[in-house]
Amino acid sequence: MKTGLQAIADDKSGYDVYYFDENGFMKTGKVTNVEEDDGDVETYYFETSNAKKGRGVTGEEGGYLYYKGKRLEAEDDYKLYQVEEEIYLVNSSGKIQKGTSGKKINDGKIEDFDYDGLVDEDGDDTDTVYVYTNKDGEVQKITAIKDDKAADIIDKAKIAVAPQDIDFGWED
Image: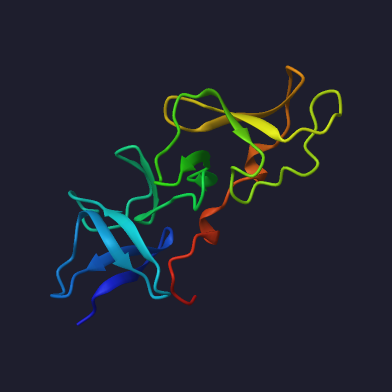
């Protein structure tokens, strides 16, 4: 009997993720303390009804961001993720940062974000960015600030962790 996380082939997305408890029963809803094959322990969320019941959620659920059921979190302060063509800023608990009219984030506070070489509209070095999101938490723009002058600095499609880079703890 198979237990734990299971990847099941799907024609559309390659595979879907499900979770089976120690008795072989498929779990739905929020499941905490899921041990992945690499030993990491994560939180997952699985569909609770309809034809998708048990399948890992991709997108927002309860204000948190998931990909194939796995809650996407920053290890430290913040991290940018791309899910279903949108970029989201999440914190260390996986909570999507929504409706920000410019969340000030200092150097080193966004994981895997290269602050080196950031310049404002005058070409001066800067290490502070403002991230603007809409009411759904989708990143609209990222702006560098220096001496009270703002400049859009980044093509948002190039700065986030893409779904194919999310680690589920198993070998491909």
